[in-house]
Length: 81
Image (tube, rainbow, N blue to C red; front, side, top):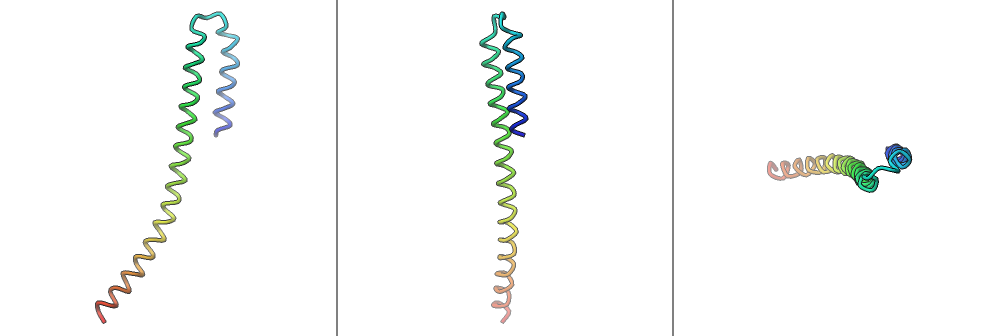
């Protein structure tokens, strides 16, 4: 996905360079485009980190649930004995 974002962003910038060469808002346009590309990259990085974190916590959560159930069973045996 990151390669796609980078490729499309670079292609837009290359095309726009020639197209907007005589426009007054040339620098402003490229500043906005660079900011937009950086924002899209940040969204992509956040989503990837969120998914990795969620998968890791899900794995830890399942281990902790099993551990707690085994411990609860031992506590119940101790109370009843």
